[in-house]
Length: 237
Image (tube, rainbow, N blue to C red; front, side, top):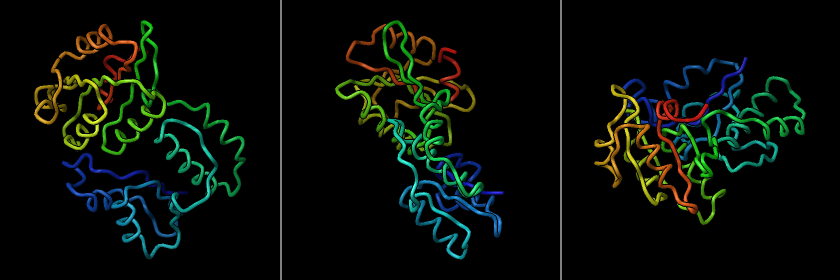
């Protein structure tokens, strides 16, 4: 048995709590006495809280403090999760073939995570990032891979997310932002999102997607993000 705590962020606040400490308390419910526990990459506040809450546990390993294989990818989230997975495997199996792990890591692809598609000769990146940290990782990867390119974002966000932080990050990196709604009950409308960021509002997701794709220039990359509901509606299968 093993317990793994991945990055803890402020999300699902209506269920888990409205601050990082309360949310972490809920996540730490999987930690059992004597069962090896891996704590993945955290924000500075998250790591500080985790160490404080787990200070009396001698069966906890922090990924950031351990030696792991050198993993190559523009997808920062993939690297962090890969290192966490490696340590989890090593803890369970005692020995892991690093070369085999790196080869599998290089070939691994998760649908809707930094998912690059070439549509009608244009580049579209689909990423279901929906938290401040995951959006930050997405933007970091975009800037690494597409140096000199401009980004046009199509964004939809569900309620209960750190909406202002997410849109602030997007606003700093986007040449243009189009705001839409991908879920009538659980999501913000494009108009509601426009209260936090300057952007064009097109509530119909398919219409918004097709308009951006049609107008996308050679020096631009389209980025579809903010909600898995958005991706499920427009991402090619």
